[in-house]
Length: 129
Image 1 (cartoon, helix red, strand yellow):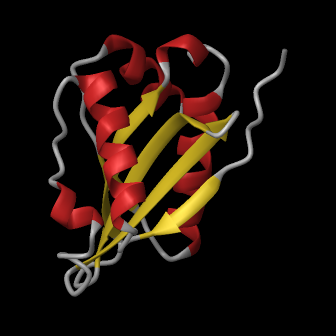
Image 2 (image 1 turned 45 degrees about the vertical axis):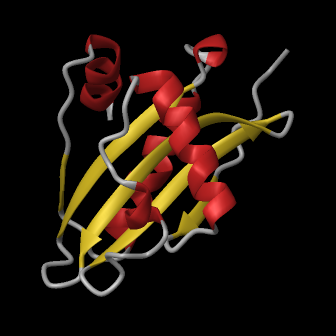
């Protein structure tokens, strides 16, 4: 059974139900969420452009990543919240989402994305990209 690799791209601000769904998903994956809910509801829109890339399978979140682009220095961005549902790992979801996010970042003039992880599996994906 193949995995649908269709990427959905959302620009923040998100609706509250979508933001809560993402937060719940990330808490399941990471244990805690680095980015507060208010960011996804639009508190940073004057300073940053934030994009959420996600994949759904059977109406459930299968994977995500987030790119934050500074409005004052649009060449720079942050990359994070890369996550895939544990039952769907090693199926290419994270690689596909990250690849799309990087392509879009370059298209809008981005030159450098900051990211970091203590997760060896995530580091493997980042290094490959």
